[in-house]
Length: 76
Image (cartoon, rainbow, N blue to C red; front, side, top):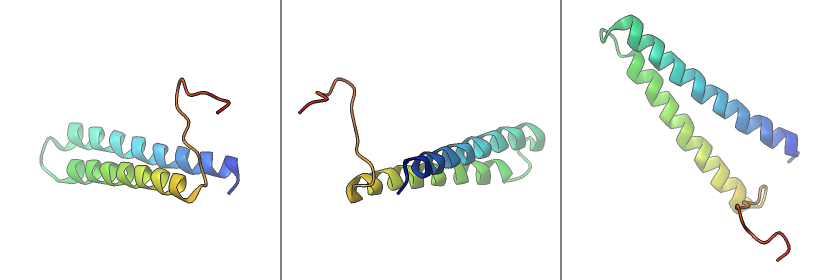
């Protein structure tokens, strides 16, 4: 998989997560607790977050990406 495609996929997930977070805030302020739109938006945000974490773990397991940490020796 192309590196730019991987980056685009992760950025798209993050944009959707932020969109649903903003929608939850908007519905919370507008509906004033009269509907379940806030709960639905925040539920979608959590589902997207879990899916993104699962996708990153799966990609690491499949060898599509490689984790790197701060302070790791670059020349093992």
